[in-house]
Amino acid sequence: MWTGRFEQPTDELVRSYSESVSFDWRLYRHDVAGSIAHAAALRHADLITADEERQIAEGLRGIEQEIGAGKFEFRPELEDVHMNIEAELTRRIGTAGAKLHTARSRNDQIALDLRLYLRDEIAAIRQLLRRLQGALVELAKRHPDVVMPGYTHLQRAQPVLFGHHLLAYVEMLDRDRERLADAARRMDVLPLGSGAIAGSTIVLDRPLVARLLGFSRVSENSMDAVSDRDFACEFLSAAALIGVHLSRLSEDIVLWSTSEFHFLQLSDAFTTGSSLMPQKKNPDVAELTRGKTGRLFGNLMSVLTTLKGLPMTYNRDLQEDKEAVFDSVDTIKAALAVNAAMLGDARVDDVSMASAAGDPLLLATDLADYLVLKGVPFRQAHEIVGKLVALSGRTGVPFDRLSLEDFRAASPVIESDVHALFDVRRSLAARTATGAPAPANVAGRIRHWESDFGRDA
Ligand code: ARG
Image 1 (cartoon, rainbow, N blue to C red):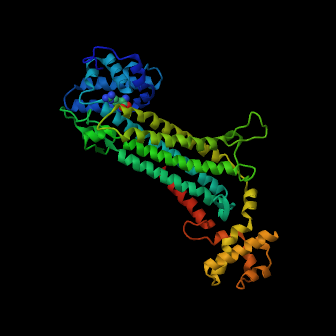
Image 2 (tube, rainbow, N blue to C red):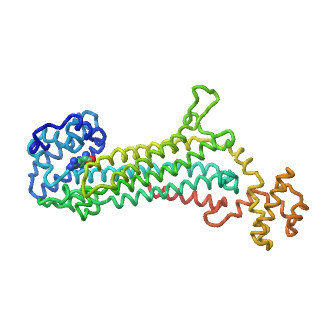
Image 3 (cartoon, protein in one colour):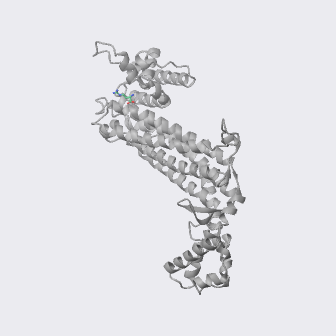
């Protein structure tokens, strides 16, 4: 491709060191789409004939099909997907193929391909996020009455509806969807026409190309367009946050499926056994999801680090963005799909949950609130209840079965209605503020999500 200036062939070590086609071949569909749109602009500028444009488009579609069918032979000595496709096109159609790269550089070409690729993948990932949200909402809906202890510091804190816990993840995943949509909006800029760095003396109709490729804007600075990969970082960052959310969900699933918690039973299809211990049923999917989050972080760090010291504009370092992006795309898509399926297949042990939620200490704050409503300042109420908790611990009498005398010794404002306080359903039903887990709120949120999902369809 550059034999004009060179007298020696590329060293074999350099070839294998610098080739990217072994991974960037994945961009072939977007590379072809970009080239077909570019050919339309060349035709529009009368740089190629209508017949040449047709030859180019047909030739590219033929190559695209062969790649898709696994019949195309990529040549590493041609470095990347761009040169492989262009060289093969020219081999097939001759002169018209040799005109395709007019007023274009691989620098604006790769900036385009990666945007087109991420645009598609973001749409697919947003769909998969929906699917996981759907599985969580479905699970919440199937267990409308299941109460569980809510935890802070992994210590029992206050009662919540199981559905409320699940819907917390639905909120997180919704912000993930928004973040991706937001990244896609900023990515929605055509870089093609920026050339290698400074556009071209041959001026093409960029808005036409943008329209053909479905971009709403064209880039306003050629140097920026070929050199930045902030859009890739935004995607990687959104992917890393999805990883954080999935990893926390995974940790819940790991805990819930222990004998100690016994809140959730994963199906055989989504667990693995031990080669040694016959009794084991391991939550490997959750563990792997937790583990794979590390590579999502790594991919973001890797590209940020690649970018930070680069002089303007394009530098070959930028080729290092691809594998990180591909890996995050693959990792997130697989994790979302398998987790949605796994949750759809999980059994909830509502008896264990109810028994854990029956711990009267979960209602210690309710007793403090009771005192406050009788005029005791909250800090004093906290102290009084703390003493009662200690008394229960010392005597072994469950907190809710302490005698009225014990309660009144701690605070004379306590009356015989205190024992009615120790009812987890009452406690939940009272939590009616927006965002709190009263059953009516949770049911309302389930309806909200269902109608939200309906709007996608
Ligand atoms: N494979 C290259 C990349 O990923 C494409 C652009 C190459 N441009 C160049 N001038 N060598 O960044």
